[in-house]
Image 1: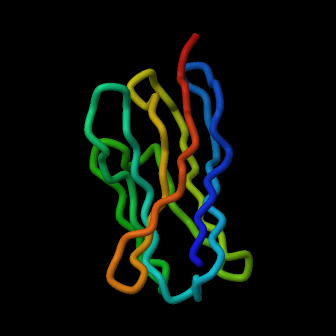
Image 2 (image 1 turned 90 degrees about the vertical axis):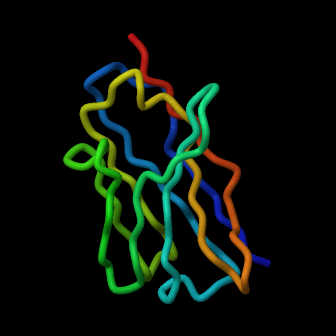
Length: 115
C-alpha cells in the first residue's frame, strides 16, 4: 500500500517561510514523479510544483521565485520550501504521485498565512 504523508504546515505571518515535507512509503520513490498541489478555501485544487525522478523541476508561474521543490530519494521524501508567503498562499497543501494507473494523494497539511 502506498502512503503519502504531508507535514510542516502551520500558521505563519505574511512574509514568512515554511518548509513542507511529503514522506512516501510503499513505492520505489526514486522512480516516481512527485507533485505538490494546494486547495485554498472555496477554490479548486491547483498544481504548485512537480519534480521528476532525475530532479527536473517545474513550479507554477505565480509561485516561481518564492517556492522551491526538492527531493531526497534516500529518505523517500519530497519538500516544498515556501518563502515570502502571503495571505493568498493560505491553503491545504497535498502531495501526489501516479501509482499503477491511479493517482495517490496524501491527506494534506494546512498552511495559514495571517497576521
